[in-house]
Image 1 (spheres, rainbow, N blue to C red):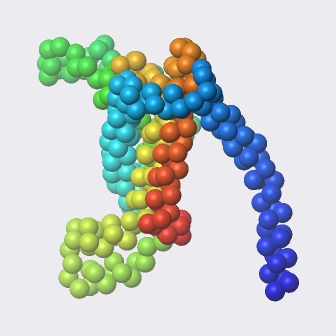
Image 2: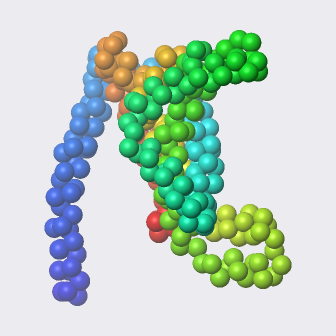
Length: 277
């Protein structure tokens, strides 16, 4: 009994510096934001009432959830295909997949956003090529709208979705797949009825990572949206630094943090934590 208590005390002492750092770096500033949301410009719940009545704020919330959902579905689907090649492909295929996964981390998000502007703008490479081959007569509107935002965010978030999927695929018991094949199941049926369900934890983990990242994305939507597809992080920036309306910006921030916290609580409520590792 004494040994168990000493082990717990040692673990608590080891965790104390980390908890102190998290408290000072995140919890304390967040409490200040919470205070602003109740005190600026006047004390009360006026800013939270505005969230329920302001059509602009509600439309931005809905747009953010819609874009985040689309980006999550596309990113996880693309990451799943890439991860299958990375984990189960030939050595050459694995090398190419690994190159595609790691190289994007070497390029800043700002550089990638402007790169997509160069590709998708009316005079960009894609529209220019399509017009040269006669496929279109007028430039397609591919940027400064939700389509451009979704493309840019998906490109950035695919690598982050790969790693939980790779962990789930590498921990998969090969004997189960061999048993399915031995019982006469085709490759495609084995993939959909055995392989995909057994990697469910990786799918859930990668979807959660991408969705949470998408909710707070700022640089890519601001550049590729061109002010026409404002998401929640950009709205917070505009309210605090340009309006200025610190109280409403703080209230939006608090609601966003609580929403993300609720998502994480649901994740750990219905999925065992060890399934996400």
